[in-house]
Length: 260
Image 1 (cartoon, rainbow, N blue to C red):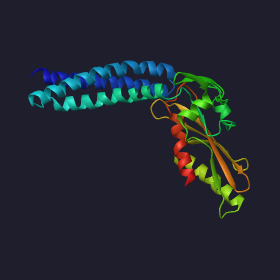
Image 2: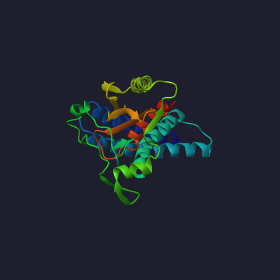
Image 3: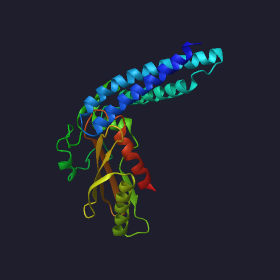
Image 4: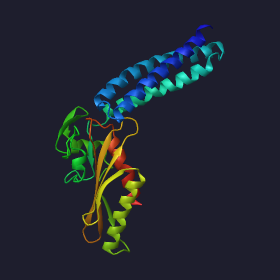
């Protein structure tokens, strides 16, 4: 029985050590103390220590259930749950990185992707260029294909949105859609870089909470015949090769709300 509280304390200690290491990796990257690649390398020991905490926590709860004794439950419960999160979240991202295509540029229009203008100066030092990656060759499901084709397979719902003007004049409807798009961008917490009502262009950025990974976003609204408008949106990461679906997740809620 004396091993039970020891296992609980080991689990808690491993979780705390791993969490502090992960926090250092995350915040150091976010505040520019080192680059994204080094941040991921610093995260790896945190996950390894988290595995120790998870194993110790599982051993603690197995023993507690076997002998019907909850000794050390405070340490054990925190260590087990915390270590599971510490290991589970990176494991989920790892799974996404191997199950989704290794792309970081997603656009509703893969034939004529919206281009960055104002954001060109914002991302001039970014490892990933501002040009559209659609023609670039990647390997997905063991097959070599273009980034645009990989996107079609992985995210078939990411496509242009066309809206009919219905009871509005075209000018009224265009204005309604443009200002709705801009209001949504603000509501999502994106940093607006520029917007131009005449050309129907909105540019913004979205930065992840933990590692501060920035995706640049451009929205384009233009006529769709005489009856409505076509809305396209593109999101591209400044760093990294595989975005683990992040850019698609930026675009999806925007398209859903613009359809309403």
